[in-house]
Structures are given as structure tokens and as C-alpha cells.
Length: 169
Image (cartoon, rainbow, N blue to C red):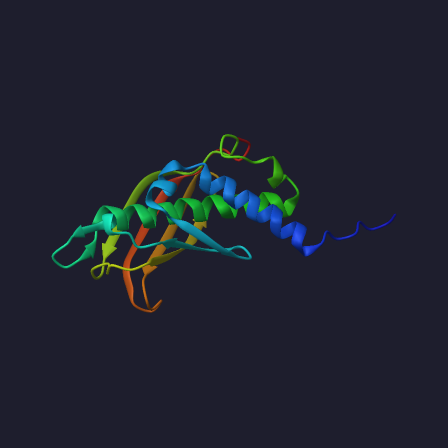
């Protein structure tokens, strides 16, 4: 029995990027906020590019608390969904080229989401990463940290609990 030739790295990368793009474009609110994602292997960094209309208090100026919360929650949900898709792609259970924004696996639903505002979000780009603490068949727990200029100076963090969609649909 002959072993299959491994696919070229570029082909694998294109498939993974296509799956991530389908996931991101499947959520219109991500586009509304202008959130982008930088993928390095299986790790995602969410990026919220600065815009004047994201400012909540022009006297400080500071990012709106709702924008900060939404940014962290989107990061958590996309991070969990990406980890599910990644596992399915690696196991060969999913062909990422068949995904498009209208035909995606169901996403986790928020049970609760607690945000700690540690300092004002400055008028500049923000970044966030999610860490899935637990992901079972029914429930997941995720921690998200958001920063701006320095990863060690977090301006907001959040913990969320999510209801996981059935794995078969």
C-alpha cells in the first residue's frame, strides 16, 4: 500500500485561510465593527482597527465599552469556532473549500460573558486572543485578553461560558 503524497504547504494554507474567511464573513457584525483576524498556524489574533466612531467618550477619548465588550465576545466565539473547524479539517472530516458564509457549522451561543475593564481603551488599534479553557460536547469556557500597544498591558479581559452546538450540525 502506497502512502499518499503530502499536499504542498501553500495548498494547505489556502484551505485554512478559506475556512477562516468563510467563518468571519458569516457574521455580519464582525464586518460592521471592522474586526480582522491574523492567523499563525492554529492561533488567531483579533484586530480592531481604530476608527473615530468607536470612541464612546470623546473627552478622554476612550473606546466605547460596548465596542470593547463586543470585540472580546467576537474573539471568544470565533476562537472557539476556529478550534472546532481546525480539528475537523485536521481529521479530514471537513473540506474547507466547501464552506461559505451561508453554509457554516453552527456557532456556540453565549450563556454569560463577564468583562473586566482594566483601563481606558485608547484611540488606537486593539488586539485580542482567546484561550479555550474547557470545550466539551455541551459547554465551553473561554478567557479573552485585549491589549493595545503592549501585550503585557491588558486594557480589558473577559470570561465567557458558551453552549456548544451539536457536533454533527
